[in-house]
Length: 205
Image 1 (tube, one colour):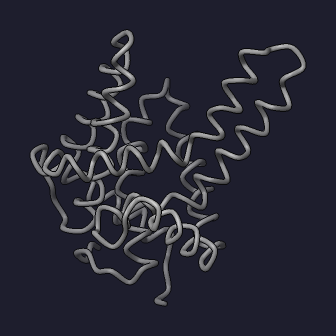
Image 2 (cartoon, helix red, strand yellow):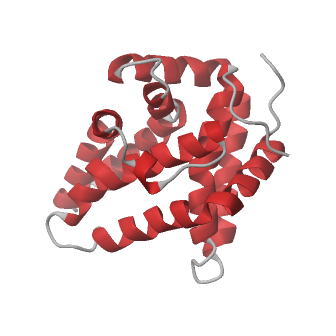
């Protein structure tokens, strides 16, 4: 396994973001707008727009550039990514939802739900890229992601901490910085996946 530098990956993510900012920011802003639509907004974002943003980030990381057409190119893959996220967040979502509904004496349930959500996202982050690369189906992607994270836990944990840290910094100037950090994150994570699996995208200095 080759050495993986988190700072270099963020540098590559920044360079790729500068080339593809319109695509990445456009998809993020579109998702924010659509999610405000009553009843169906969140569904459209979850099923279509979020997976398209994930696919756009993966394609940018792998080939250097992408387009809106490529982001929506394979609907079946987008649906698989949606189902993957749905499975990963199902149990934590139930715990959090039940905790908020019961309200009284349910703070522990909510906390457990959020902790479980963090752990599952920490170990399951790579699954969508295994799906998009064609290396795995939905359930095998979960297994591959957990295995990849366990084998490289230190690097992945530091990567997540750096992501959270940049997110906090991005939120300071009235949240405007998140329009940069957020899209960059969608490139950074597939870059991390490509580096840890040994798959090759384009080299970016």
